[in-house]
Length: 222
Image (tube, rainbow, N blue to C red; front, side):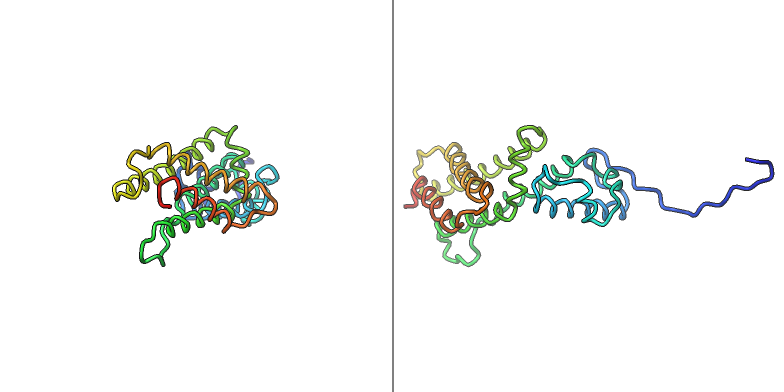
């Protein structure tokens, strides 16, 4: 700089938000809002298009942010998909268990209601579910989340069987854990084979009736 010259004043700008580490949330409101927009956009985009066909620019364009902004919050398409997949798997696991209109607490009716809610959740998220299945074998993090979700579902069913045993409805000699694992695996297999991996999914009510009857026969409700 020549002697006597002055630096041109620069307009004040907010510093870019620091990239969160280890899954931590951004520290500024602007950063949190932008990250949430990207996640929402990714959820919608992966819901329409399978993982392999999605580009990062598809996500940023839908979110209305610059493409480079993506890397402030996520390292890769795999990382943001892992977070979206965790949300979807949590929703599948949290599907309603009791029919709110079943005031008489009919066990079979609640079972059918829970099965229907699970199948409908899988169907709503069919493309994301398909992408999870394709990626989980080569993505250790995603595979761990999927496994943890499966085990959580099995534990819920195990407790359900144990309650039926305590009430004298279910055979007390029935081994709750392996039975729960088998019943949960049945529903997952039916949901993915008939509602996810088909261009024209099967009729959900037909699947609900068929799987619920198998559950009822297994635990002694019929």
